Length: 486
Image (cartoon, rainbow, N blue to C red):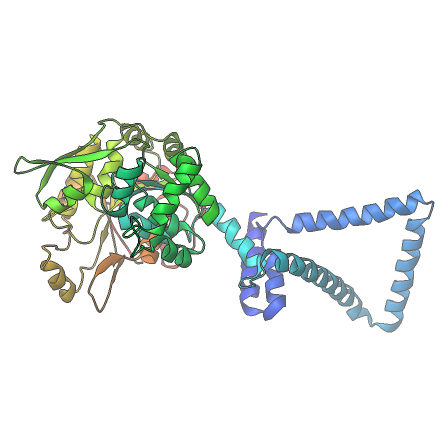
């Protein structure tokens, strides 16, 4: 049965691509997993039984008349149609009636549900089914790095939980936090926009900043929207959940904690600075980082998502101000530590951040995370394989920023598996270097598939979105260093 489903799935996929127009789209309805065919068949059987029962109720003899009608039709067919054509003719007539009925019925439904007509309903259903069978992924971080990752992951799974830091105290978020209290909405806003179906429009709307207005200037619409939602609902957790429904996002966005967290950092020169924005601007080497209150409680929904996760990803993002703040919540550390049975990976930054990680190698990132968590949580790290261009490195050198070096020997000594892949995109004009959403997500999903045994190594060059599968002890049997093509 499984083999039959695979064959039918491949046939319908190829037919949907190669057959023209409406007929090609109609063939897609035969694809397994849509949960449509069985109900259409059940409806057809129900109609037949209803008509039969009604005929019996009014004392007709429907079976006799049906047999007579069939006999008459068979006589006509045998009289005028050659023997070798009879079966094919009946099959063709049946398929034509099925196709016509299905097209008209579903066309009417599509016209109501999708008046814009950009996609076929069957394509939407196929995508919906595929995404909701995807792996349960928990992505932990903050800033633009996490939203970049989510933008790619949402093409492979709708079972995504983004755990977002709430330590931001600068810009519009900081102003709203000081004036209204509650959580800083900036990172939450970015993640909601990244996971939205209409991402381009929502991102433009949420990122729009008012240029004029007494008290409005500098604020982004998304921050004001979330702050208003927190006022008219029962707090930030419900506000984010309601906003997620309004924006039709794939997955969920959760703050690491609902506490009013304020970061502090101790630097190599002995000074102690409070506030996420002040720490980023200080420019010194950080030796210790913490928060006030010292042990903020985790959101229960976050712990539940981690407990049910198939795959946990940390980063990318600013190490001390976006990534590690999530690990200052003890409950999150304990929850991740319990999940030794699933893949857990840290996505390392491509370039060092001036002041915050100047001179850091990949192993220094791992050591900083281990020190903050008090234990090893992530035993694999994804590193950019090829360095940025000479022009990009020259551009970043003016900011005292350099590529993060991969020191394999030290990483192997730490027992950390290294995943090498090209996940970078570089702007040819500005020479800005960023993670590519598409490449990063594809490599992470491919690695997850290998570890879980869902994708064979020889099939890795043509990776499709991965479905959730059983866990495997192969986690610890992978080679220390792997190279994956994006």
